[in-house]
Image (cartoon, rainbow, N blue to C red; front, side):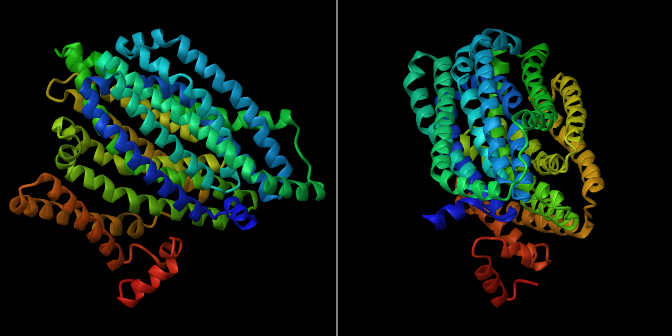
Length: 538
């Protein structure tokens, strides 16, 4: 029992990142299992309703919770760095009470204001879905407190477990309700799917509560040792003030961008109608955008694991005045971000048509996904660099940069969506330019703060050589398999398999991946030994 508890309570930054990457991969696979058949069940119009409700919810969700997990994680990490466990737990208690209030307020606003929100977005059919989603804000707030606390202890297992529980509840309950309510109309089916999201957050919060209760004995044992060392503990008022000071700028930055997305959703419907599309046609096109978004979000969501793990890692290094460790962690995270996200984005760009045909049996989202494939690299870098700046205490810099990017997105979308020859494709164009701008601004600031060095060969040349080699292999393989097999499904899967292997081999061949990268992986020593045996590791 003690051995398991110790495993639950300590991982390194990179171990935590691996745990979250695996959890996020599981979550996204399960999410796809939910989203893909859901598109068959409710179609583009239903997905348009689902997407509208989700955009409204996401804005309030970010306002209610975005900054607090980061704030709790940072403060807990700093307290544990000086072995003040009593204060770390007090930070959790204060945050938990605060987030209960915030969650209840968010739920009330969304529930009672549903009619107002759906009228503003121009989709009155989404009201029932918004109401169904409102209680989830309360449960998400509770999860935020638990996740921030455990992440501050550099323990990513509870976050990973709760994410899997949450998405399983969403899958089972959401799809079942959507199926059962479909005979009442697509609005009810979409609301049923949304209610699955609410059910998932309830189950996730229960899971975190049980994990906390299980590990409480160990936590209190460490806290008692801290008390015996007579560490000074800040008052609840001081902790609350610090939580709010850290969380509010992060929340503002995140909510600005979420508000931009909400304005974007409103703009899409209105601008499409301004160039001759009917409301029903506009809803279908908006639904196709919802088809592309889950595929686009998959690679960056896996990268979120790095951003979650990097906050306590950098905060801990800076609290200990270990600038070399902070610099090394920053460079490692950025390099891994490029290595993971670049091939994923190129794959979506080159195989956008085959992928949407494989998954949805409908190529309506092909051009949207192709454009979004370009944005994958930029979104991934933004997620990680935002976390770096927040962990370094520069919480207002991401706010400023995201505001600049968000305004650019709104302006670009307004003009490009209004071009009949571009129409719905204007939305992914605006997204790509927006994240490119934020990426450049963030990288400049990260270099100033951490003194990180962006080695051109390691960060650009080697990854791009590997990705281009992969791209050539993917296109050639797909065309050849289509010629002989006449099956898009088999050709797409085969091309992805070949491309992934070519990319991995190229990374090894040109030394883009290093020994230390292999060693941080599960069974890293065994993998490295095998690679050395075949002469694949330089």
